[in-house]
Amino acid sequence: MNRFFYTAFVRLLSPALLGWMAMRARRSGGDWGVCSRARFGHYPEPSPLKAPVWVHAVSLGETRAAQPFIQALLNQGEHVLLTHMTITGRAEGEREFAQAIEQGRLVQQWLPYDFPGSTRRFMAHFRPRAGVLIEREVWPNLLSAAKRAKVPMLLASARFSDHSLRQSLRAGSVMRSAYSSFHSVYAQTLQDAQRLEQAGAQAVRVSGNFKFDIALPQEKILRGRQFAAALQRKIIVIASTREGEDEMFVQAIARQVKRAQAQGTDINEQVLYCLIPRHPERFELAADLLTKAGLVYVRRSQSLEMGDCTASALRASGGAEVLLGDSLGEMPRYYASAQVAIVAGSFAPLGGQNLIEACAVGVPVLVGPHTRNFEQAVVDAMDEGAAIRVPDADAALQTALQLLNDPQRLSRMGEAGAHWVQKHAGAVQRVVAGLNEIKNQGASQAL
Image 1 (tube, rainbow, N blue to C red):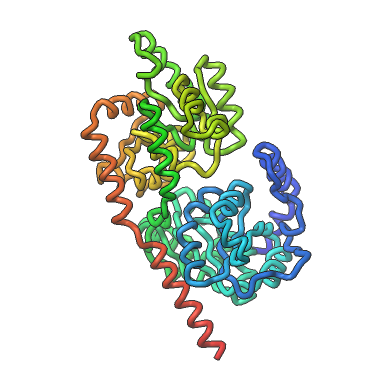
Image 2 (cartoon, rainbow, N blue to C red; image 1 turned 180 degrees about the horizontal axis):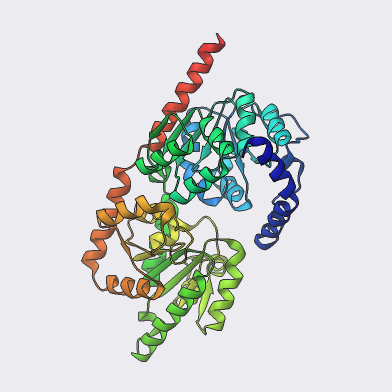
């Protein structure tokens, strides 16, 4: 399939695609601008930025991954245009870069849909000096518009699974042309680099994963540890649960709680399970599941209203069997409060979620069997002694409880995770250096 037929196919499916976007927006809430003028490359005012570096982070995970890279750009005086496709990514960017937005050094915008006219108008309006796509967001018309506008494009912290390669090869010349149009590609691993080359990418190099360069918010880590110390209960965090996983873990928690009650364990001596759904639209579903399972739970949003570590918030959490993590932007705090972290997204065939942040905090990690999106990182973390793979939710909770009774092993795993993250840092510096080379070449050609 070439780009002409790709565009015709996208146009034909656009009503269904827009309807799907509208359904996602209704489920998650917030203003997604599904049919806004910006989604079609129309802007009422001139761009406030002059020759910005454009960074595209499609959603929440990519925005978090891009945070150290964007901060490095801001630190060297760049103006940044940051685009997203989802409201969760946009909200995270707004929260993380509030000061730069207020100062006019960073502007957020929706990425236009991948129609030729929309993408051409986007390039003509913002005139970026370079574009950086984070991890795997590759759109043929967008890249064609960038090439026509002479905007050098980079794919950074790129991950590319066997599944992605098969999809790309099936799409034919349209995707091969898209990947070959990148000025530079920075892959997370050697395996990613090899698959990207098979897909058509050139000038591929292995630079590592941006997530290893994450700057953890020390205030949130301190608050998490203060909460755990004041609560005086052991905490197991179940992070980033996705479709189908909340049910698994709620039932597994219910069985563990019932077992503890049968043994006569006092509530204050029981483990507090912290369940954190990945997407906000599933907070209420998780709450309903906890209610139906007969579990006593408190919402994180309620404890925030009470004052976080105040006596009333601690009493509410102390009397609960489960803390429902229905807040955004607090994952470092959750991890810092825990003795063990179960990183979900890997207990159903969904590809897994990022475990690097938990390791960086220094908490031992458990993952499930489905980790294709982060396979190399998971294998490396297991080899370092920082993570353990388990087959299902029940095994995850049972293993976590066993670890709680082995403080020496807990300590070794936490230290191994922190060391592993420090050892692999540097991806941001390598990509920034490559971007600066491109900018300098452009400046030389302009003279």
